[in-house]
Image (cartoon, rainbow, N blue to C red):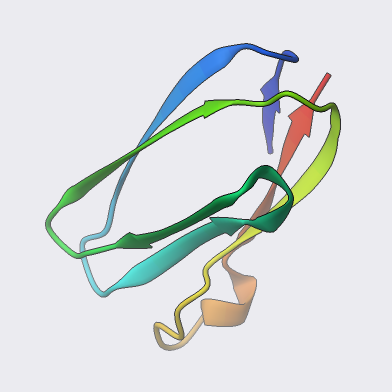
Length: 74
């Protein structure tokens, strides 16, 4: 769970050590590919409040269906 304030500027720095993954938050317009061994930077300034689901959008192996989270914008 990640909590943010409305209109707060944040930067996600995401890496993968094992496989290609996807980081998607459809309601916030995020859909990024995370390549192994590379850092992916995602800048976000959420302009709407709410609870938004995150997930891995690329079938990445065992445990893929468990790769999800929540971003709460207050």
